[in-house]
Length: 486
Image 1 (tube, one colour):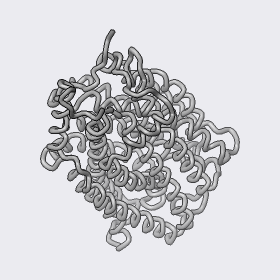
Image 2 (cartoon, helix red, strand yellow):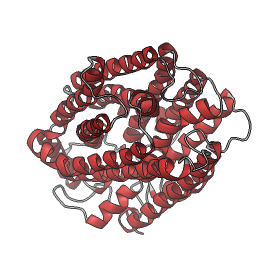
Image 3 (tube, rainbow, N blue to C red):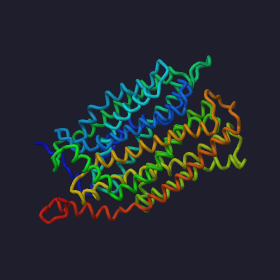
Image 4 (cartoon, rainbow, N blue to C red):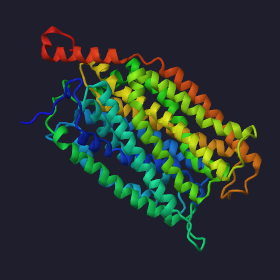
């Protein structure tokens, strides 16, 4: 019988580049979903399908909370999956196909959408995404114990996640939602969103399946059997014990603010680009490339930052720097010191600032995600269980609830600013645009300060992690000597 290694390779061992590539590839599906939900879904259901923005944001928030509650169960079941393909691969082979159908259906609405209908579709899509993403990301602490290699795997995940989402965004702006010469099509064309959904569905399913196949030789094999029998009481007791770890609670607090801020930014992005900064079609084609270039720069820069400052201090510093840079053009515009919006000088300046802002913001997100992996051993030291799926599912639960809150707050911001339905760029009163920009940037700055104050309390350093991994390895070698929770 083949047995999967429960402890992963030895600390300090480097993973093959091919394995890192295939592992990162699986995050494309999550990137497409995240980009679609955050960037296009509110605009589609509000401006194209005619739903009240408050109802759209409420539906998405409800769906996120419902799905988020289920996420820890998916993670727990993933931890307990026992098969010749290991704990994670069965999920990655089964979930992508129904996900593709659900994603395509979300963007194909032939009748007036309702609050209940949107909630149901959003829940189905998000649950299936979780069934792909939670087992995939839970492989990180299984594949390696090394402090830096875990960050490398996360860098690949973010690179592919952002790359996949931005590629489909670019195609949306340049192909699916591009205005035709006769004036048809564009950002308010329902048929363009249908094509966008179909293309995304195919890419999502293919990415997850190829990623699973590429990791099969490393991840397949019977895992160790769970120490305790499965029942609902045991499940909720073990989940509560794992997810109440103090280090994890710090990440939940800081991440909650980060994902709320990100949810606001992503769901407001098209409003900001079209109405505040007056981007034209060419600008919208270039902007995804600017963002992807910033993610590549982050991919290359982050190892140096972690070598010098570690994950925690890097996350704290980059969160503040990224938000400060992002707020800069909004502040200069409010002070009358920014070039006239819509001009080449304005757009070029925005692209430059947004590039550096995103380098630091993504650095903070990757650092925090890698910190989740390091909580696994801290929890194992106390409980005797490895709960990779539970921790990453719990982190996704937080991310979804916070993103839902961000999207909900976006709807309230649009209403508070007085943003009209079916508004055209250049025809919205200046006072409304100013209100929207000021409300938005005040929230971003406040969230960044809160993120930094919370994450600086994370207790696990490089030295702590390496000492803990060594102690756990010794305990596994000589279990009679103690060191693991019974």
